[in-house]
Image 1 (cartoon, one colour):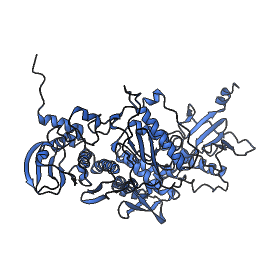
Image 2 (cartoon, one colour):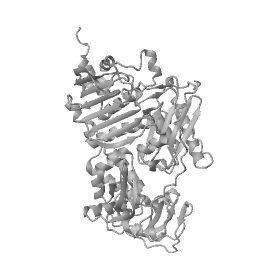
Image 3 (cartoon, rainbow, N blue to C red):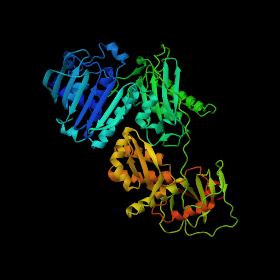
Image 4 (cartoon, one colour):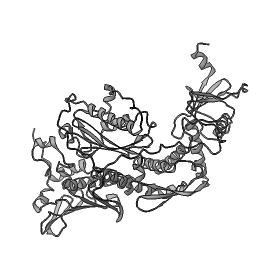
Length: 629
């Protein structure tokens, strides 16, 4: 039987390609920026309207195109980057598939203006929905100007899946950040709804570019990394252990100057900081890996963000060792403990099997990729934990080193309390508010200055002091907000906070909400904001770290959660920053005050994030463990 297989019309094929390449406005910005960079532009200007849904305009001063090349550029698989199959294994440019322009033109109203240097006239091409409307001579500056209007206007089903303008803008900002960071020698300007959002001068050093994108505060706790082994080279800047974030927004990885999201590199960075930063926190790293192009496959996915290494295990270990060596030197300590190569089960979590896994790096060293003019950044001050509740009596005792167990002297035995608290496998799951059960517990001491030990009757209770204090602040903030009675404290000395342009866009969207939650922020020029007031309960918090973490959480939660969940996340972050930390010594009077406050809570058995706050061990359970029953 015949007639089932047909060749797809060009229009259908272009729409399929567009589905792979053009996912959202940020995809368009990425493709157009990469084309400009490959065209050796030294200045790229970007304009965005309504999160890219209304218009995207990209102008560059690269080498432009002749009329013949401009017409060919809108044919599928037309490219200047490769000529034969062998070229695919030696790709050094950002774009090479030849699908970007025809894919974008098939789902938008596109206008191209281009002219080569030295030409007297340029070319103008207008395409709507893949249909060429106009090709004509036109005056133009050398380089290329591409305007994309009404993205997805012919595919309304795709259009309705786009997020809000602010969310789409955040995706665009991430793309711009990655490519601007990878090419500090190129100047960039960005306008959002006709308002200048970013201005980066050409010929920056990498450190200057990081400061321009992430703020000068970010570079104060960075140290330079530069290590090589054979044909492998890693360079860039990494954060000291005191500098960590709530997500990976400050973790950028590049392979041969190509921004990538790679499990091998991400895992290597996280493992290098193992035991050096708190759990569920992420190190700051701007890491550039250089290696021969034949040892990495960039042709894995149409977006070119995913790559595959020939010897992923060797690269993983090289990056881990380079980071740990750099940190050891920066901290003036003995070498950090060497980390063993992960076993096969761990390796499978971040690398893919390869037939060439045993390949050796014996190629000639790559051309030096060091950014000129870089100097090591002085070591920053370590972050300090948030102080304890102002309601607690102040401690007069030096904390010293954490002890394994610090008992409180109490010669007499307390009177047994009421019936034991209900628990499931030792974890307290239900406590009735207002029952004064916590107040009846007798403090015994602290374990590792992190867990409070108390007894009541025949039961031993272990309380996570940070989780307990976090719950107290969370419910207090909730109550004050519900009653519209949030206590605000104006700062005697306002705090200056520098943001990345992506953080700035998030902050602008949520400024009214933050004001409602007691955080009064005002623009102070460029990407700098002034914090003028905070909730009174947060008066002793680290304000900069608080704002950065709030923005990190808003960036992440904005992708998946609704408004109410975002607002609740704000309270959780604020409570976390105010609560006492682990390894903080408490006096018995402070513990008693904390227990009394727990009795007034609605849900005094988990932290705001849902982790257990208290565990019960009965005397019977202990006697069974010791074989006494």
